[in-house]
Image (cartoon, rainbow, N blue to C red; front, side, top):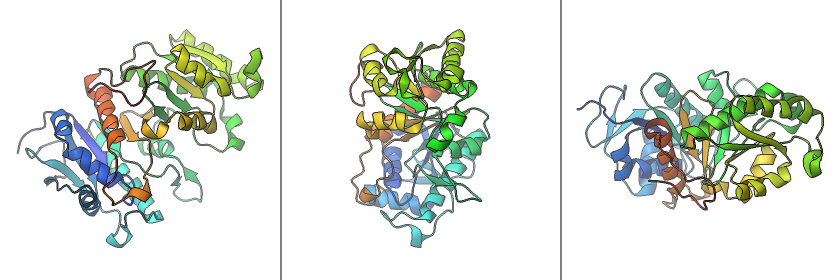
Length: 349
């Protein structure tokens, strides 16, 4: 046994019935991954074994209770959990049990990081809509992470692509609730989270465009009540704090403008303003960066892809890109992406 000398990265399998277990195993087995970081897989042994079966890889696992203390040379650490029965672990067959399992494994990884045992988390894909305990409501992964960490900052899922990063102020809240959520402080704090996330990825002075809530801002109009009361004051406050924030812009035009004018990020007001545009731009090939947390959490953006689960066909490209960006933002502090004018998933290795 030997003392840990490299950063320790916690990897969770995501939904155990999706492609996440296979991706976790493939990533942990890469010599490049093991050269750059020590890895602890956080999840049920049965889930990890299923990932090995799908990937055609057998890992030499070192079971641990406290990964912060020791590392078994040449072996991947494994922090075991007990979250799903073998009868519910069926590749490609999603169930409420597999969703709860993914949440529990992620919660264990969060506890590990908060206890000082790991530098950050690479979470393999899980469902975006998660059950809220004690009610019939749902929440997204960003809100779940906010609850786990008890942070008072907005936690944002940032769609990170090589040419543009995008998030929304209201997250996945229902449209009926969005207007009431758009106060100047929340918008300002979301801009701050985006600014810090881009700086941590190696961009010293990021340019951020902020959209309007109402469509009337298009054509030179001043917008409506929300723009005057919240959006414009938030942008002015951000600029006064030294952030390069511009806007408000019409959501239907800003994305094309951002790509041509060297804007690095867009902060939208609500989910569909962001997601429709990023889906057309190929976000499924990108990464999800969870900004606003006291530590880094990243995930491939493509979702659990149940249709490919257990078949050995999972493409690890987005998982590898997530791993590289996680290392750059937590350890190396050097750019993981080229910004402005890129195409595809280009990154510095």
